[in-house]
Amino acid sequence: MDRIAVVAIGGNSLIKDKHRVGLMDQLATVKETCHNIADLVAGGWNVAITHGNGPQVGFLIRRAELAMAELPMIPLEIAVADTQGAIGYMIQQSLMNEFQRRGIKRRAVTVVTQVVVAKDDPAFQKPTKPIGSFMTREEAERHAREDGWVIVEDAGRGWRRVVPSPEPQEIVESAVIKDLIKSGYVVICVGGGGIPVVDNNGDLEGIAAVIDKDYASSLLATEIQADMLTISTGVDRVALDFGKPEQRELERLTVAEAEAYLAAGHFPPGNMGPKIRAVLKYLHNGGKEGLITSPAAIVAAMAGQAGTRIVP
Image (cartoon, rainbow, N blue to C red; front, side, top):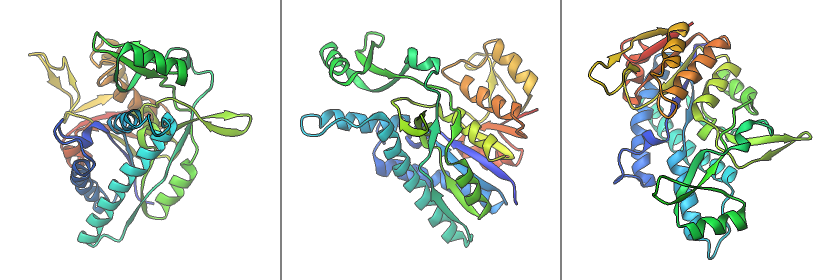
């Protein structure tokens, strides 16, 4: 079997700016990304594509809020499933069209993916992940009372709902994803970190939470024994002292070096930190190579000409 790469695309990377947030704008951006992924496939890689969905879930929840006078709210786990389907459709169609144009005899398929989290994960005791729109205090208190939302005041800008972000434990459909890859399919999966589910006496049940997309991608790469975990972000390379005059870009890191820089505070929790941690987790679990780069530089990075490569 050819080499397998898990390629993680950020949900924010599908939105170029605040003036181009519509679904057709996102589709145009997806087409650009799929051009790069088709290059990887043409180069002999089998690819599993994961993606974020933070902005898209926010838009969907906001639509539901505006329609509350007529329609019930959308449960968060259903919103994750909805956006998995919508973004998966855009990637799947764009890839198929790209393959057709190039004469590549491959097909793409989207797998709506559930990810098991632990019911006793500490994240459920302290929700921190903001979703949806800002609210007045009155709106927030009504949602807390009627819908059981956890609400916090957000830096003087208004009130927002916060949800837990538990650690992914198991990808329910990983065996199916691996079989599809073995059969030659490019698989779009684990969208938005996966639909969070808990095991309730043998039954899977959805739960209101958001799983970090990069951590879920790391787990997928481990479970399907991928040769490479590639995480796309807003910069071509990881840097030390980011944004400072002494900023220094990194071409290659060992696990020990990455852990030392992480401990020294070079990779903040709300920025590069989760991406570095995701790659480290994959490598500690037997992974071969991790790569962090921008969507436009993925092909060059996979060829060793861009990006930051992290190795055992």
